[in-house]
Amino acid sequence: MRLLSLLAAILAAQQALAEPAVVYSIGGKFDASFNQAAWVGAERFRTETGQGYAEFEPESVAQFEQALRRFARAGNDPVVAIGFLQADAVTKVAAEFPDRRFTIIDMVAEGPNVQSVVFREHEGAYLAGLMAAMASRTGRIGFVGGMDIPLIRRFACAYAQGARSVNPAIEVYVAMTGDTPAAFADPVRGAEIARGQIDRGADVVMQAAGGTGVGVLQAAAEAGVLGIGTDSNQNGLHPGHVLTSVLKRIDVAVHGAFTAAQDGSWKPGVRSLGLAEGGIGIALDEHNRPLVTPRMAAALREASDAIATGRIRVHDLYTDGPCPWG
Image 1 (cartoon, rainbow, N blue to C red):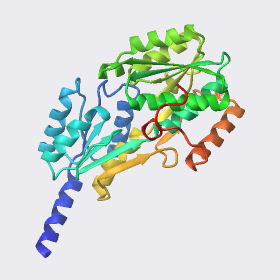
Image 2 (cartoon, rainbow, N blue to C red; image 1 turned 90 degrees about the vertical axis):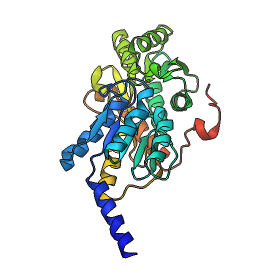
Image 3 (cartoon, helix red, strand yellow; image 1 turned 60 degrees about the vertical axis):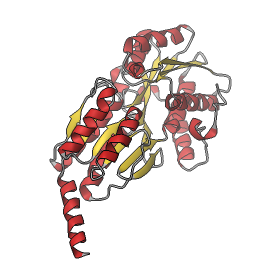
Image 4 (tube, rainbow, N blue to C red; image 1 turned 180 degrees about the horizontal axis):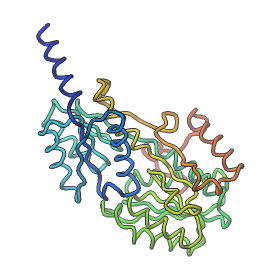
């Protein structure tokens, strides 16, 4: 027993000293969105600890499994995979390397050595819809998603719910960019869809489309209407033309995985982060403060508290069924 305890202690020490690694999703590390938030979390870990980390920017889904396996074989621990597209690769590679720890961000993957961090992004989307309805002068707002999957539809549904909590008659235009992962990396197409919604009268357009969303925000700014960012704080991309950004704290999740592995508190299983846990938020800064009226700010605070404490139930497409708001 004493020998087993010693071996376990040695293994734990080796894991704590191992360099962590991150495999980004499609779209590049500096996509001003999902991947960049992951990089921010990794850089925060480097600054705080002085410890480096390995990273890889895949150009295709086929490279996920290769990268995860390469890092695991090299001894990196934990290996953090960014995005739902990596779920199958994580499940497979984690089974091959039971002595390595894997964290996947934004999806659940199986395995006794796998930690899955998911977000209640619909809570933030509800707040964005509330703000959009309060800012709209036309009574028409838009939503441009990336790949047409339940995760993005979940955003759109809650956005409509939040908007209709302010104005039950508001029109909400919803469009998706495509049905493959490339839909998250097509800013030209994103701008085109946004312009179509603006031509129909939308004066606030939210994006939930990764790199594609940069084009959505650009089109909104050029048309003189308001955009809403997602994942990272995108208020500064077009100051005065981005009403807010829904913060999906990928940085918190990555930093937390790296730090927990180092201090020994890393655990497998599922972690769900929402408003109450600080995993979801709304960006308010010098770039959008003039756009947020005192009345809007008060409504935002009230709704945030009500969601965090359970007094407002935001429809969850995963558990509550089809969206009642179309």
